[in-house]
Length: 509
Image (cartoon, rainbow, N blue to C red; front, side, top):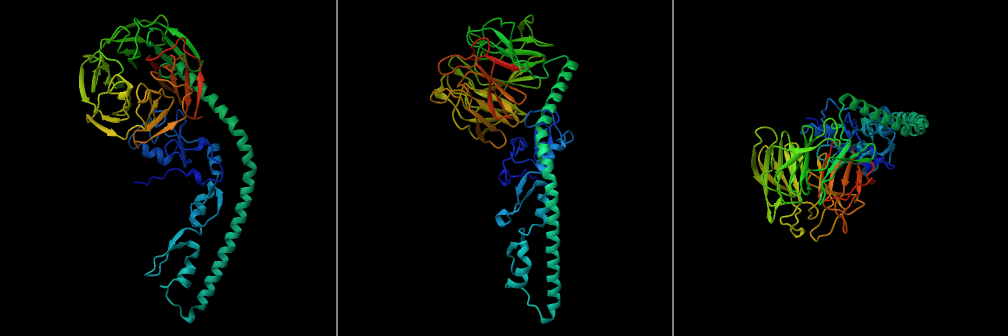
């Protein structure tokens, strides 16, 4: 099996490298860049090939992906990468050469600072390649002594070394001439890059628009967000991502909050608590082809395993998997499976190591990642623990914990990561922090904080953005909506909802 070689260390480059040229897996500068064909997320060929050995999805947008469907970036992108100035890998051995990336491999193959081992029997010292001959013949205590008749050979070797030096000087001069010619083109390429990028974005937008017309449905594009209910309200509204506009939908039959929501068979389904008490029923609304005010909510034949609130659920094939939750003072530790097709069976799969509610849960292939939450009805029972549940093996395993205890937060999946958004810490402090926790490395890091502190909020993924909606701040319930863009690494304020909401439900369709 071929060895795994990740991208170039960013610290080796003589100038700051644009973050668009960093691999989204190893976060180093791209080596042999390739793209996922739909969303153009860029990776090192070796990094994405290794990832696809275990998962046939893009680690950034989760689109289906194989080695065969990987796309090549435009020639302009490769040219700009090739012209980046980089230090030789042997800089720590004394090489001060800075050269364009396209010439790096050829230079390092012949660099005089390449480590080389003395071949004299009994020595084994490691030296720079350029010092090897002098060491072996003149300095090494294990060298073989030469006889006087070898003078002619020494002259030939000296002449050979002079010829090699002269040829190297000639090659350096020719290379500098080529570099000067390339520099003349670089400015024009950079000036045209932004213009070309804008053209490509417009072409991609047009392509997506045509695709929607063929399908005649918005559900596959995930450009709408449906927000339903919340504490003290039964209203429903929809946000169109492209138009940046809110519009009302048919209200819920009764006020609901603290439940979960999902999309199955062109229906938005809401499960769980209402403002009149804990319930186990589910209601749903048809969104095919598009949701509107004439579309009504109806009863779903499936019910939760118990009357629950503040539980978590994920869709797994034609089943809904539900974990934890609370009913009065009773906090549950069960993981249940609900069949969403006939015969609508419900069964208990396993139990979590701790009871928990107000937690987060996301699906990663055949595994559930369950994070945070609380063991009681109060934030004093907050958890930092992370549990991986293998659905096929029916096994729970404790992973490395989150950086702090948190509950009442929102979560979304982003590639191989779960993103933990806001919430309340163990002291009851409302948070604006964002944790991105990698399910493979079990390591978490912080993203830039939100503009608003909030808990009891919801979040969905739209393209390269995490959209966070509503919640309760330190003093009031929020209408605000903000989005984090992974390309720009910044938050953007979006148009507010028509009314303030917390413990509401939201899905992207």
